[in-house]
Image (tube, rainbow, N blue to C red; front, side, top):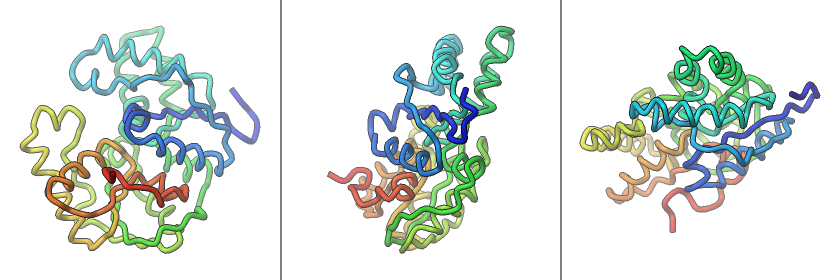
Amino acid sequence: MSTAARPRVGLFVTCLVDLVRPQIGFAAVKLLEQAGCDVEVPAAQTCCGQPAWNAGADRDAKDIARNVIMAFEGFDHVVAPSGSCGGMIKRHYPEIFEKDAEWLPRARALAAKTHELLSFLARVRGMTGVTAAFAKRVCYHDSCSSLREMGVKAEPRALLSTVTGLSINELTDPQVCCGFGGLFSVKYPDISERMADDKIADACATGADALLGGDLGCLLHLKGRMARQGKRIDVRHVAEVLAGMGGGKALGEP
């Protein structure tokens, strides 16, 4: 563990970022380095185990969690560009090992130093602004995990308010789920689609040009429904905009 002014941060990239939108990971690295951190991406990292845990596959979730703990416990901090995966490590790893005297202390130790990206930048590193530009009206989707498990709400808005040319039009019901919820969208597709449609209608009513958020699962869910409805709102992860990487193609653009 480092005691230097530049902390060693292990970036938990997440499966979706790695497989679908790796530029979010590069944006996260850029922001963390701007915040004075030395960033490493452990090659041994895998899924956080949330799908297995939510499906009741406790033994598989425990095996995955052990691998994540071993890969990241040597860092000063663990940061994820996702409240969902961050919440899995921070809130649910201690539950997974609740009756395991050997692994529970290690799970709790990792949980204590695990953060969602924007909350880490603002609360831990004291970042108050960025130098990016993004000349669009945006609305912001708070994922359930970021909002309820990680307590993230003010941080993305505070940082976005410093982006040149950007204005924020708030959703009417920002606290309402988009209907993704991982396995929820698989088990209950009709309810999931209805919830997504309500969220999209809320976003369209704001007059925003772009919908931003901090969890790629939610954003993919919403962009997929938008594409089916012919809606033309850009959808991006907030890290891309804050890192000055919002000029590329938005989600779903060919």
